[in-house]
Image (cartoon, rainbow, N blue to C red; front, side, top):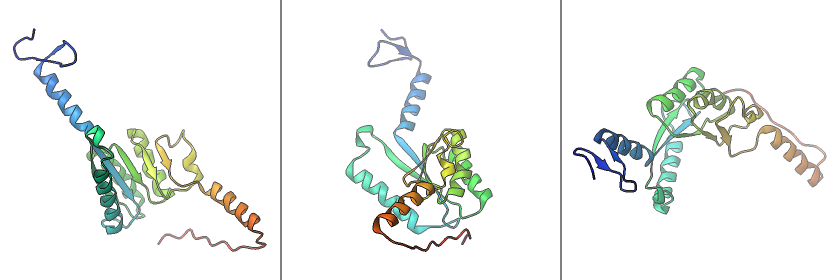
Length: 181
């Protein structure tokens, strides 16, 4: 039995008012879309190489049907922040509050990721960085939603020292720069 103006849930004999049906459909629609943010340290405003890479990845995912079983599509949101610290935070706020992203790729550098992840962590948005190597970002208490696909600097140094030792080199040169472009 159903009452006038109500729907019955197909899997359960439960009645719900039309407003609840609309709310549930909107909620389900939100989960069919992966709102993916890209937070790049490329100069603010334009980075055709990064956007081309993002678009290529999205096309490949769609072509291979990797999200078909969940009936999900990806909508990208891109913020090129350069090395402007206030804009790094502003862009992170825009991605979380205005664009309502589900996850973020990038940061562009450790400094950008550290600043942005304060915002992403407060919003519960996971961030995956491809170039942020600072050991500070390994602290899960400070950066609970941060992860990376490259090892931190201290691991890289140990690994390189081991390679140098195993090869038998007696001297090496190290170049370091802290200057921003």
